[in-house]
Length: 270
Ligand code: C2E
Ligand code: MG
Ligand code: MG
Ligand code: MG
Image (cartoon, rainbow, N blue to C red; front, top):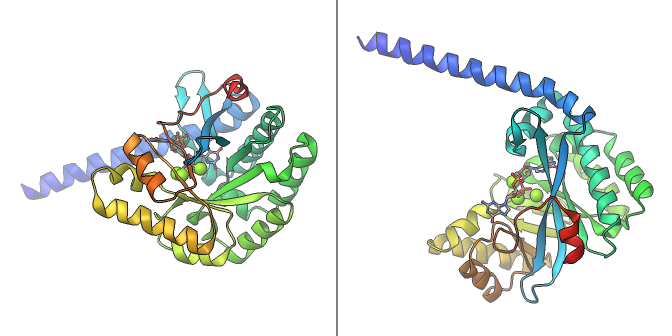
């Protein structure tokens, strides 16, 4: 009897795997068409100074406006785009669009753009960044590229070499989702990052957990001693913002301060 149950659950598992694989395949095919059909959109989420409340910049976050599925979350298609390689083209579109729109804001706010590990390993990245900056006339110091620790686990030497070249153009580099990877400190030690973004999981816990608060404090202390400004992601409550203020965190981002929005009009008015 036990055997039957095992057999059945295995069967069920396989069917689910199959379904997931089919779904990813369908998405992979659809991504190519989506780029051509201009179905991607950029939303922007505000980043601001903890002390003054002043807006310091916006992070560009991709959305897929699918004709049938509606808005598809990046969580559901970025990894597929990475597997198929489509992320190189999609990422170049994100970079170009974000820089073009930011150049039109009429201010000198930062525009933060997420970079996939696949883009960082691709040899075309340097030329893409250079071209986009020339084409959009965006001042390089306004562009910030966000990379996660996992971004530089592939070919580390090559990735760091590319980052150095980008930084030499005057573009700044932030380490995203800090504290969640397995080699956070090593990553921090291997490259002169311009900003540390504390992962939002620590902020989410901070209201209830003394341990999470201790980790937030430790990351802030690390930033202080390395002289790297720290931004906290996922700030949803006044209590969290209060903690950041007390502990000397430079910048914050989260639903409390603003959700990602599509319209640049909102940016201009800010
Ligand atoms: P991320 O770069 O860490 O971006 C922050 C994510 O947290 C965004 O999710 C944002 O909407 C969400 N968020 C911001 N504030 C809060 C908050 O207070 N509470 C909660 N619960 N969430 C908050 P989103 O837009 O779904 O993006 C998810 C991830 O997808 C991003 O994480 C990033 O890793 C990736 N991604 C988004 N756009 C791009 C892109 O253009 N290129 C690449 N390569 N990856 C992207
Ligand atoms: Mg990010
Ligand atoms: Mg993040
Ligand atoms: Mg993330």
